[in-house]
Length: 254
Length: 380
Image 1: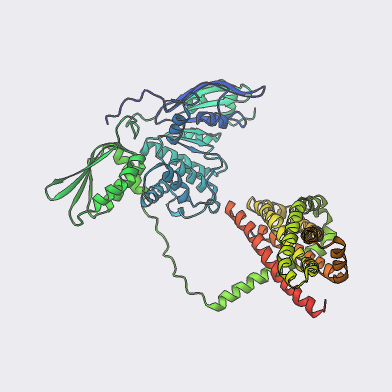
Image 2: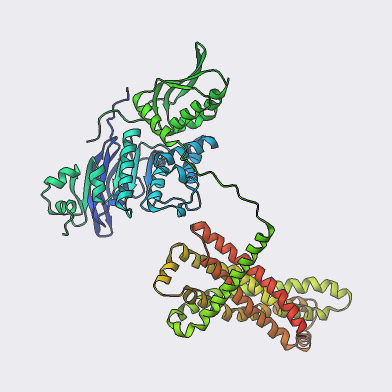
């Protein structure tokens, strides 16, 4: 494999802050996601996990700080450059955000139709492949309203994969799922990383899921208004002295 | 830490892939070079599949040793090329590309599918039976509404007056400008169109009778019902349909609240209340529009007034009003029913709204025919 050395991180946030009026959600959030890494952003409800994700993908300009996504400074670059980078990432929103009037196959074919020259049979085949990748090959002709929550998450991941992005950002992929289905999603994330060399940024507060998939994590806290821990989640669980971090990993009420 | 080997599937700096063909002994060779990503696959797809399918029967080797990267879309293309002919070999894949290919091959395996049962031809009896069943459902639904009305005293808390007033405001007060505009225009048009031929017989004055009677007996109630169906029937269907889609209707039922009493009856009652008022407004506006044309044609206002008062009988007016009440109830009922029977997903809401408008207008016109026969029999 004579791939060029990857000196650039897949995603880097530097000194990120978000304020709403006089309220500070977080400040000084700095992190770096390496290629082929599964990076988890975690924390309790309302600590700004999803907001941070929106900042990372260029949907919400931060109050302060910079986002470097696949080598592009998202809030300083020209709109065209930003859009080009956004086409090279896949995002799964919390609710799945599948288009309700289209079948799963059509949901995946839409970005292929807009952004590639693939002919119709090609689009159909590539879309079927994506559904097969997430284990939904037999649900291609169903509408989003006709599938279960776990299937909807898988379908949303398949749509995020439509343009074969090197980086996938998932917002709460296992929220609202039973432990078995949730473990299936974790398995899928690890498989996709192994087989396709993808990089994942996952926002979640599901403890089991974090320990199963995360190479490294970043823990936000509402009261501390920022990062309270970073690193390997297993190490944090076993050695952290911070009562909040210990509480989170040992499921103790604060 | 992440596993070290191998690097990412898609190094960013390699040029897009190329296609070249050659020979090796008996076999035909197609070689691909560079980076086969989704954009390159899109550009190459048609050409590559044609090249692979050319010269059937001759062995084909697809040489991908020159491929530096390949994503799943590229893998889909390679596999489609390989499938174009039996016994085709994919040769020289690098480890990472081989992994992607293996994964893609696995993903493309068709799940075993139960053989679709051939649908037997539907006999006409069943078609008619289904139609009758649908009509029967509609009647049953009206029956349910009636039962809900009878039980209203016991469930008076579920019937919220605020909803009724809000709906009456939406469906009635806010429809007034539209009704006035339509009324004036219809009066103008009818008077103008009938004035020209009537004048040839010296019967200009009788245009007043013609327009007044057609407005009061037919057009007033009918147009008011069309306005109600278009403005409010569709709105009822969309509101209730959205609630149905969001499981809010199920939530009401589990709370022991009857959706019929809480959602449907206030809307029907509001429609019943506002329809006579809208109809009268439509008629008055129509008469005003007619008067403008006739005065312009040189007929004094007094003569028009006398003509209308002398020739119109009270039951022309009250018959029209009675019809409008029935139309209002039916349009509202059809709108609410369309909403409550909405399926799943955003498209279902749109379908419910369409159903409400079409159903409301068709039912209004059918009922108008029934009323015409009824009034004739009763000598009204």
